[in-house]
Image (cartoon, rainbow, N blue to C red):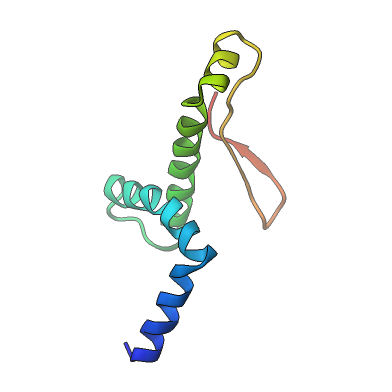
Length: 93
């Protein structure tokens, strides 16, 4: 890759896009490990599903949220929104 392309990628990773990539990278890595034959859109969907699961776990780790869940005051439900058709797909419960 030309130096200018490398520099452009580095600049992207330093900003907001970089923090987004860092936050979803574990889900992408898990999806790839669990589904080694997936590519393209199928891999993206699998990574999205794993990311929802990861975020659910992160939310449930909050002591305040955990107490509310245990008390039956709230329920954590994983879902994803499809930008193409506006539909929400529930992924848990």
